[in-house]
Length: 489
Ligand SMILES: NC(=O)c1ccc[n+]([C@@H]2O[C@H](COP(=O)([O-])OP(=O)(O)OC[C@H]3O[C@@H](n4cnc5c(N)ncnc54)[C@H](O)[C@@H]3O)[C@@H](O)[C@H]2O)c1
Ligand SMILES: O=C(O)[C@H](O)[C@H](O)COP(=O)(O)O
Image (tube, rainbow, N blue to C red):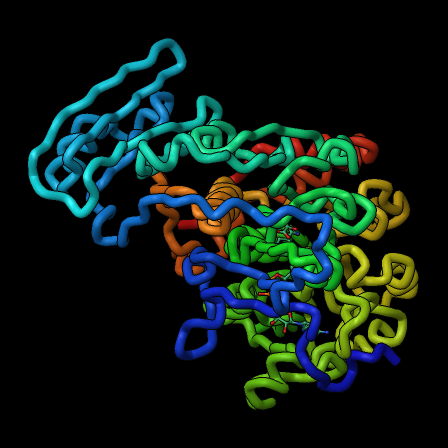
C-alpha cells in the first residue's frame, strides 16, 4: 500500500514563509500568493558556505506602497489597449515629492529622456526614477533608485532561463543578466552567478551549483521538484517559487478537458475527487462546486493540520468519484509522499470507472499502471498533461489517453506574467535592489465568471492533443513555443 494512505505530517523539507499562509482562514488565492513567496533556508548555514560569497547588500531607496502607488508605468508601445501614461508618470512622481525626476523612455526605435526639477521637500535628497521595459514583452517596470548610491554599486550577476517569457529587459537596469537555454546551465556557466532564475527544466542541485557562488534561486513555476531543497537549505541558498501563479489556468485545463470528453456528459451532478487541495486544488474544487459537481477533497497534510472535517481519504475518492484530479507536488522522501500515489492498488479500488487527470507531475501517477487500468477498463479515460520521463513520454499512453498534452496546463499568459513578476520581485528584494512597479496588474483568476460554455469556449485541449500526437518528439518545442492562452476573467 502506498505510504500516503494514512495521514502523516507535512513535508518537513520545506519552510515556507509566504503570503499563502497569511490569510486568516488559512486559504490562499492566486492573488494572495503573489507577494514574496520565499522558501527560506533553515538557519543561515554560513558554516556550509565557506566557498560561497555573500550577496551584496547595497544601499537602496525603498518606498512604501503608498509612496509608489501613484506611479504609472508605461506599457509596451505595441500594446495599444494600454494607454501610454508617460507624462502622467513624470508629473505624478514629481507631485509626490521627488526633488529631481528623470524618466527614461525607450522604444524600439529611439530613446527619449525627460527630466524635471521639483523643489518640494522629499525624504531623500535626490532620486532618479528609472524606467525600463522589455522590448520583447508587454510588461514595463519602474525602478525607483537612489542614483548616487545605487547605480555605482556592484550589480548581481543573474542567469535567466531563456524560455521564461516577459522577463527580458526587466532586470537589466539593476543586474548583469544573461540568458541560457536549459541545457546550457552547467557548473562552468553558473560558476560566477549570484542568482539564477529558472523553470522546471534546470535541475538545481549540488552537481550544478556545488562550486558556484549562487545564493538565490527563483523558479518562475509552482512546482519545485527540480530543486534539491535540502541541499540548497544546508548551503545557504534561498529558493523561491511562484505559488499560485498559474493555478487558474490549471483549473481551466481540468474542466475544459472533462468537457471535451464525449462520454463524460454534463458535469452537473457528477462527483469530482480532488487530491491535493492547495493553490490549484482549491480553485478546482471551488469551480467544480460552482459547476454543479459534488466535490470530495483529499489532502492528508492539511487534514492533519486543520482537522479531518471536509476531507476524504483517497480510497473514498477512488470508490465514489466519476473523475479524480491530482494537484499535489511530487515528493518522494516525506512522510506522505506522492510518488506513484496513483498506482495499481489505488486504481484497483476505482469502482465508478472514473476519468483520471494528472496535471500535477508525471510520477504522481504510475504511467504503466494507468495503461493497465485503461486496458482492464477499471478507468474510463485518462487526461494527462504531466508524464513520467518527460519529454521522452510513453507512446502507448499517448495513444490511449483521451487528452494528452505536453505539460502546458498552467500555460496562460496571466500565469506566466505572474510567475515572472513573482520571480523578479523576490530577486530584487533578496539583493536589496530597487522595488519594481509593474504595468500589468493581474486580476484574481480564481474568481473568474465560469460556466461550462465559457470554459469550453476558452480552451480546446483536443487541439493540443492532436499536435502532440502528430509529433511526440516535439514535446519540449511545443512547450517552449506555446501560444499562451487567456485565463477566464
Ligand atoms: N501542469 C502544470 O502546468 C502545473 C501547473 C501548476 C502546478 N503544477 C503542479 O501542481 C502541484 C500543486 O500545485 P499547488 O499550487 O496546488 O501546490 P500547493 O503547494 O499550493 O498545494 C499542494 C497541496 O498538496 C497537498 N499534498 C501534499 N502531499 C499530498 C498527498 N500525499 N496527498 C494529498 N495531498 C497532498 C499539500 O498539503 C498541499 O495542500 C505543483 O507542485 C506542481 O507540481 C502543475
Ligand atoms: O509547476 C508549475 O508551475 C508548472 O508545472 C509549470 O507550468 C511548469 O514549468 P515550466 O518549466 O514549464 O515553466
